Image (cartoon, rainbow, N blue to C red):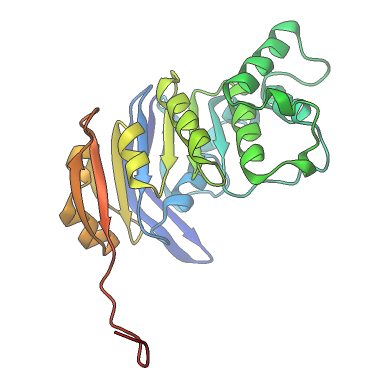
Amino acid sequence: MDLRLQDLNVALDGVRIVRDLTLDVPSGSVLGLLGPNGSGKTTALRAVYRALPPESGAVLAGGDDLWALTRREAARTVAALTQQHRTYLDFTVTEIVAMGRHPHRGGGRLSADERALCRDAMARTDVTHLADRGALTLSGGEMQRVLLARALVQRPKILVLDEPTNHLDLRHQLDLLALIAAADITVLVVLHDLNLAAAVCDRIAVLQDGALAALGTPHEVLTTGLLRDVFDVGAQVVPHPRTGRPQVLLELPETSPTEGTPK
């Protein structure tokens, strides 16, 4: 299912954070949303997963206004992995993952097919061994993977991810991004790691001060000029020796010696 943000404006406490944002995410593709802190990335995502209503404009899923759907219809369409995790008291991992089926049923026991779906999602996110653990015993990275499993069990048509690699070690970062790339699902993902974005995204959109600063393939967007102008960093961009995708080699800023320290 395709996703379209159409002339989207989103405000917080009367201040417009996202301004006239139009983005198209074709069905089955991965669009990465990049930008400096405070550029409006998370605010834009919140309008997509219906946590923050647009001031104007629309969020369209398959041509339908997401904000006109019922809560259950919207939950069948979009699943989100956010930075702010709700408190799950001490539900077990198995119980948390099973919550992903709630939009598809009123309650009661899961069917055999649904239990198999949960087991598959837990295996894919490497949390099977945590099945009987309580939520309060999990590390941040473990909980991140459990919530991704829950989102997969939800079987959404669109997956929204806000900094999904937070708290994850290197291996699980790569596993998660490989899972995203292989999934037959439309993905909108906020990332700060430019090289991870280059590796997994079909296209990249860069926000600056709430507006779209650049949009295109990783090769088109990740340039030394854009990194200087938007992120205020010096960098070299080189092709990955195996994939050919752009790799960003950051340069440390020059600093003056602190007074009184040896030169």
